[in-house]
Length: 75
Image (tube, rainbow, N blue to C red; front, side):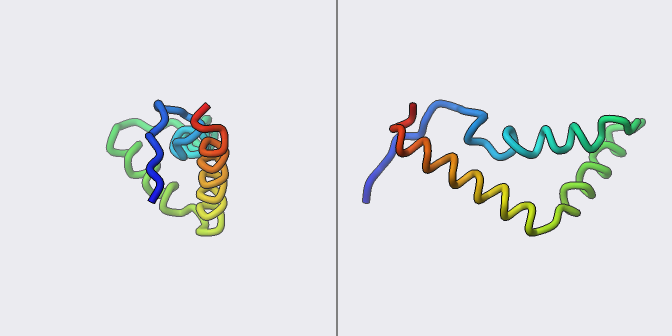
């Protein structure tokens, strides 16, 4: 078994950074939510409503990015 040290934090390797946060930001750009409870409810419903096909594509992209990082030895 080969052990690879974990690279320093990189937004290129975190699905929440390279996909989810921007996706949510764009979807809610023109929506006014009046309470934290409403924010949590609406964003949770939005994320849970993502088509399975789209989530699979995100994780395929994540794997591609990880492989690229491995091939470049973390650089």
